[in-house]
Length: 537
View 1 (cartoon, rainbow, N blue to C red):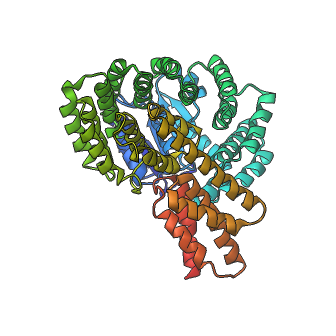
View 2: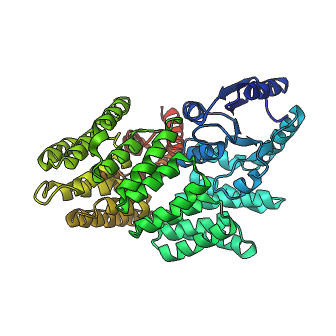
View 3: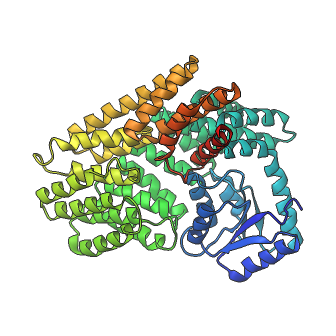
């Protein structure tokens, strides 16, 4: 067995007897450091607080998210290391269809019922396959993305079977997309598609085209993906997002309605569907779907006050003010447990005032909330809802402040076309805010491009200085992460040349103070900085 007494395992299963049985099987094989979680919410909390080598997750977890949805949520949030082995356990014979139509697939799966030896044999094979990518995973754990991309190229060339080669190329392309290396990633995807019709490769091309603003071509590819793999729900999600970015909210809602039909208990997708209805002006219909999302979402830890705020907005816009007080009290209770709640509370009070046609009171609440727009704990969803409430202010109320607030929000959060589309949609009723958002986005694009051009010309330190300055001024995460990557390269180059690197190290510390520490990429930056500190001291 490839595992040892030091291997840590999380078993996620809503059946206690099944979880205990798996623990016993692992213990007989020498794996004694295992823990259990009975639902997706408990599992996500454990995965956020501790690093596990292996996750054995049942596909059907009862109420709330299923195992596939949990895997997707953890990977998308950046809190699940790629080195963690994820094996799905399921009694559903059609799971092959489900997993083949998923953008984020587990490392393996095993069908119930199984014997002890079948489970251990399956895990052994999964470990061996995972070990092939271990050199790249180790580099990623250290925050060395560029070296990981290079290592994956070498691994793809060394692979002795198609599955290993595709795994290396897929991860390499995904990392390139994350680093903004779109043309290089496109070459990988298109090379694969010339040989075979691979849904995830076609999805990768569609995602890049979407980021580059080519919605028609992206949508055409997504239609092809859905035709090949009609249960590939991520394709529906991106298609809907493209439509939202282009202002086609009703069409987006129709696409999400189909996706919800495939995964009716997916809290995140239900929330998105309700949001799309709200954006398309169908506030009353949005109330029904958002209420469904609330009812289902209460059973997992991904549930937060955001969906309640959206429900409150839908009720406000549809004139259903009879439950406003109850919703506001529930939101206040939830927000009282988390940092950054003051902004959302101010927005909720403003929405209630707008529903009651008291614009002066709404403006007062928004002025109070605006003080939190640059707080480190303020997230995109909170800022977006603030902007939506601001755009609903009647003419003459907040005429001067609104465009300034929109500009501040866009500089901080308009990292890509999807974020831009969401901001523009939220401000659609306010032309001055729309112009401020467009200007801020163009400024951000110019800053990123200028820094990358300097770095490509060998002016790494000038590029890092520019990114550090702009990131600190805007608190934009993409600029901050680009800046961290460049500053770390400078520090490591100086360390190798035995030169002092105290100044870039200090600049790096300033960026890491406000970047999200639950992000796996930021974890890597922190680990590399710690290694530099140990050497510097």
